[in-house]
Image (cartoon, rainbow, N blue to C red):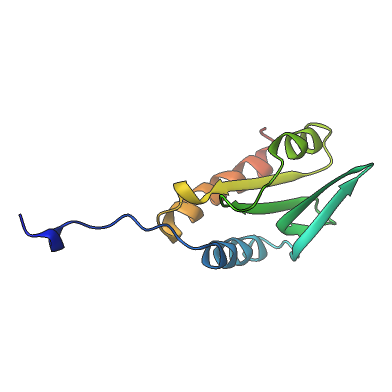
Length: 113
């Protein structure tokens, strides 16, 4: 079989993923601050984007991020915020990101966890 018939799996890079997420959140009416440091008590997490008034944000997670998921989960459990996280391994294209983020928006609207 001719090798050009095989599609190589390529993930979206972080800059593109973040651009897509920022546009989606802003289209929903959120005012996004990029590279936002969320600090609660003695804990801090830097998010790719966050609306401090709505307490809603996002993170396009890459292997280089070093995001402390247990800390982020703790902040969300304390109801300090809601954060959409998508792993770069799950984002083949913009449609993958948009499908997942719009499900997150539906959960926000209905109050689902």
